[in-house]
Length: 535
Image (cartoon, rainbow, N blue to C red; front, top):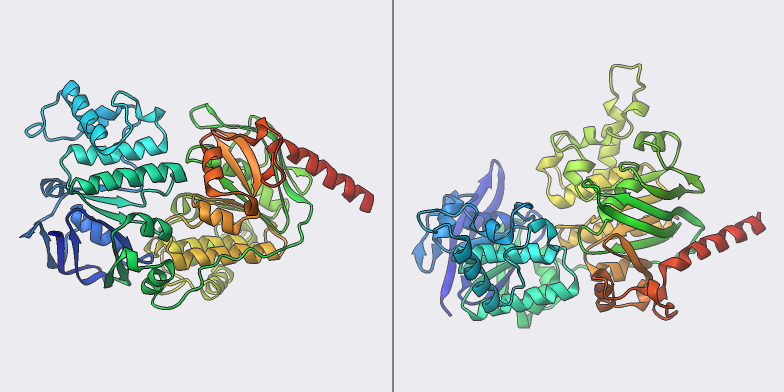
């Protein structure tokens, strides 16, 4: 098999940080190569040099046996390289065809929308994509948008494709379709680099696996000879336990109760439609659903960041509707919100770890009438979190934007938990994190569960939801398809519920499978009646 890409002693530094240190490795023609490594290991930097975003400080990159001088994304296209980023770069108001031809060089591609539509259909038929060229992007599912991004680079003639976390927001069924498309592209001679943290997917779809650790190239192994344990040990450099604990805890009464909740999106459409559920102390409730099904709006409403249209949110029997986030904190309602956008909503990226510790309680540490803030207490809290959560940082005064994704998440989780909450609402807390950092977050949440805290865990990895959570609520287009016991369901059943193909509310729930959402209110009332009797 011929070599498509050859890295020869490639080095890239950012100041004193060595992102890639003399990387020498190959990507073969007609293969699917999985690129593995912890956060900060240099995977994205290496691929960004292929995409023309960065340029190596030392070393050479060979494409099809010739030295490549890639100094811009346009150069990358010239070498028939296309990178599909995790966050899609599409114009929502344009059609699929318009997005594909957008930005093309008119000297190389004549602007003819009819001809483009014909070419798009040919690509889709050849590889198995399901795309309507005339469909507006804002009407597309997440899976369709991702397919569009891949077709966009194929339209430009890409023979080498880089897919960054391609299954992060896909259902198992959608991931299987994507893998089928990838195999078709491989059969056509395309070379594919897939960056993912899901080891089961690596073993399922790749031919070989290349491992980076702390900027160093470790090895490339045949997938057929690898296991999740062996790959993890190569990534981390030591043995690591891969089992997610699910401690058995005696559940308390509901701490958070949601009744007939309806919420709108920013554009005025319905995000959450008459949803009912509750979270008990000592319980982790997972929330599964395709991206855009209302998870974000639900979390924001619970945290007091989004107005609700109707329904109620009760925290320990007290309604928090209409209260501002600061009022919720000041009135002693111990609730912590860990948003998915950790550097946008959760933390101030330009501020130090110490200063970020002060964002929620600076007015408590330093009363409003005091013009000077007390950074001593905040610095001590930062030191404690760095020690307990093993945050890799030069000091407490390091801006959080300079930390890796895993360490940023540890800082955010540590700050929220240090407030002593009895309810934690967290959205995609391990998105983009390596396996070591992910398990650190799982362990933190399990410790909180043991302490009687109720946790709402919005996740995208169904394997994790099944292993970590006690119950899983599935959303589809803002509606609850059902709430199931994690030990009595499967990924396939969850996937059907996520796409609306299975709705437990339309039938009598099988007690061996789960509990329907409509029965939750009865459960809440029964618990409350028992509470009154005991009192």
